[in-house]
Length: 189
Image (cartoon, rainbow, N blue to C red; front, side):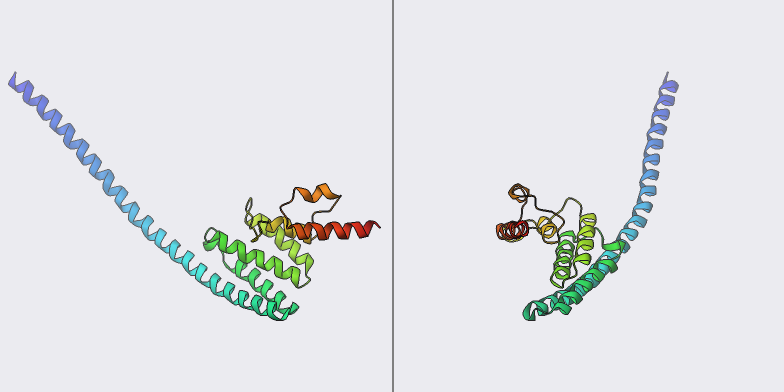
């Protein structure tokens, strides 16, 4: 009887040891892949940081041009600022596409406004389309609460007025609504 008991104990111990060894082997294997993933993650993060650093330097230069353009009302400076902002976004690359989304949205919106101020309506419309594609279901809001996208659609003629009701539901500045209605009134006369 003691022989059978010892054999059972031995089998149970061996089973426990096998489970422990199997568990340890699994931990070691996971530890190796985690180390490689950590290195890849660090490299990807470094690339993201570098891309954003370059983007921010480019954007700051474009914003400086925008400030100069506002001071003297210079159409060429508005155009240069808009083109530089567009270039900054294009050079960002895949590394930085998912980071600093709000910051990039504001810069992209500034480029659209600057194309508009420079009189480049076709380019402003194209960039508004790209803005919608790059940042779907996102919008920016002016200090008065009006929507950037809706405002630019109205200014760029993407929303046609068919009377008072068409602008009532838009989140657009009241002064802009009134001005567009005034223009529509005089067009019909």
